[in-house]
Amino acid sequence: MKTSPRRAVNIAIALTMFAVSTLVFLERTHADSKPSVQLSVDQATPREVDDTVQQAIMRDYASAWQALVSALNNNNAGALSDNFVGFAQDNLLHRIQDQQQAGLKTRIVDRGHKLEALFYSTDGAAIELRDTATLDAEILEGNTVIHSDRAQVRFYVVMTGAEDRWKVRVLGAGEADVLQSR
Image (cartoon, rainbow, N blue to C red; front, top):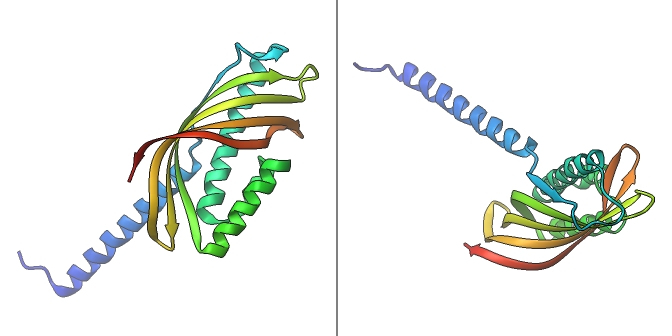
C-alpha cells in the first residue's frame, strides 16, 4: 500500500508528538518520585525516637533529596529553602553558583538511603544521622557527560525541626566507595 506524502508527514508529526509527550511524562514522573529512605533508630541516644518522628524524618529527608537532585540538575536553588537551612543550604547554594559559573550541571539518580539515628536531643529539636546513600551521578557540560559514576556515599546529617517539618541543617559527605565509573 502506497502512502501519500501528506499522510506520511502527518504520521511523522503524530509519532514525534507522541515521543515528546512520552519523554516529558517520564521525566516528570522520575523528577516527582522520592527516593527510598530506611531509618534505623536502635542506636539513638539519649532519647528514644517515636514512630511519628521516624515517619516524619523519612518523609522529609526524601523530600530534601528530591529537592537537592532537582536543584543540582537545573542549577536552580529555589526549592532548597523548603528543605534545607543553615550550613547545608549555604553549601548547596554555593555549589549551584559554582556550577552555573563553570557551565556545568549535575544529574543524579538517587538509588536510596539507609539512615542510622545516632543522637536525638532530649528536647526533640534535633537529630543526628548517618546516611549511606547509593547514587548515580553525571557531571554535564552543556549536554555532554564529562564524568559519571555510581557510588555509595556516607553522609553526616543533622536535621532540626522547623515550622511543620524537619529540615536538613548539616549535610556533610564522608567517604565514598565508587561502585562503577563510566
